[in-house]
Image (tube, rainbow over all chains, first blue to last red):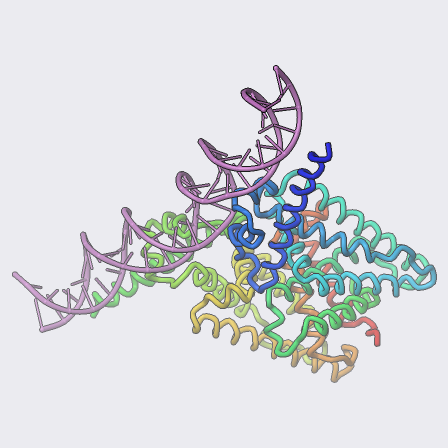
Length: 211
Length: 211
DNA sequence: TTTAATTTGTGACCATTAGTCACAAAATGA
DNA sequence: TCATTTTGTGACTAATGGTCACAAATTAAA
């Protein structure tokens, strides 16, 4: 009985070893070119062993992404101020950006996992977990915006459309960072880039709609 | 003399054949998984011949991307109305989106070529051509926004920061389309997605800035 | 204890694919 | 007619994701 547990524990620990080896190797700029063999090497195990834990390379990505989402979830505010929903929206936006800056590897891998082609390759259960997490976040955000509009803090507009637009802006910001696009703007740091876009997003929420 | 020209013409025509074969194969969703062998096959030539025209696969991408930029450039407005710069900004924004919808393959390939990793692999001359085109577009856009602020149509703010934020929103919008991210929003067409984001971007230009 | 069954680890091996190269074919020029 | 240059080609190489037959270790049964 004790032996069985020990064996299971060691198996679980090996899985952690693989994930942390992957994490450390993904730290560079061209993380996508890290090979399974390199990960196995770093974790000091055979390549075949990796596939005893993960069905494919994408599942390693997915596990790192889910762990990133969890970090995000841990810092999610439990209580929303009743008197200033706009500030709450801005707070969550900035929190999301901050978490991405704090865990850059997890964030860029997570964003990579958004791609339809990647998702297709994931095991059913993992893909489901992704969808669930996203849906929850989105619902929460929608309710918050709705509440803000009800009490007049945010101009009345389609909540669904606003969420969609904020999504695009958010994704665009992070993807430009992870893909090295912001290098085109000389001397622009990720921090300042995020600051600029956070403010733009708030302006977009408050701005006059055409049509 | 005539013979030489004919040979050169045929060589050039073969290059076009390769590019158009690539274009037609990239039409599917997983265009990145199209192989050089498939392209050669479609163009009815040997694989080695492809490399007589292009130094690497990325250069094929780059050529398609440049041709896409050209299409964009052709429709670029020659004259900006002096009395309504905001409308002109919106017009160019929508033009950029429209060109991307009209030439989806070119657009997604062009966006892929933005990635730093891809650029690194391009021949010097091609990379230079990219940078040049982008710089020109950006300068033009900056001047337009500056003019709009001067005559009070657009709230006074940092032009540089505004351009950066619009970039992020624009990139995010298109990337979400090309990467299949908008499938998460049930029934959302690319057209409507773009419409929503165009309006959000205008709202962001006009909206109240915090700080 | 001994033996069978199950779990876990492994690297040689397979399939695929970007890119190379020695050579073939064709055109050009002397 | 023959040499030189240009262009075309597919077999070959290297790299990499993934598989599998087998080895080692653990557990269960006899």
